Image 1: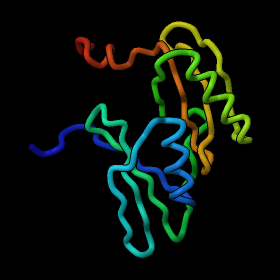
Image 2 (image 1 turned 120 degrees about the vertical axis):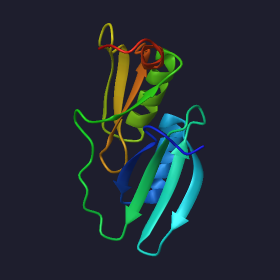
Image 3 (image 1 turned 60 degrees about the vertical axis):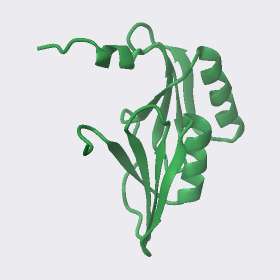
Length: 139
């Protein structure tokens, strides 16, 4: 059966290995595949929970702008303590970090951490997007 629907998000990165390590540590993503096409290297990362991947592409001529400050990738965490721990670790590493903070219903408890290229990764608890997506469609 062919893939249908939303399958991936792709980001341009300056250092593929540094970005793979960041998303492994802070988003729990594993490398599914790596590709090398001479002037471009890429990696497909997944959390093994859905048919969706984050594609990281290192180009010889890097020129993309990063996501943010509003644009971001979102990762749900098991609890607030996991977010607190990851945000504290990011600060110890000197990464730009916002939060954690409780943003109330719908948004929940969130923190944002910048990846090596300045893209914003949001860690959240309490958004329940999966339950919302599994529910009835609104007209």
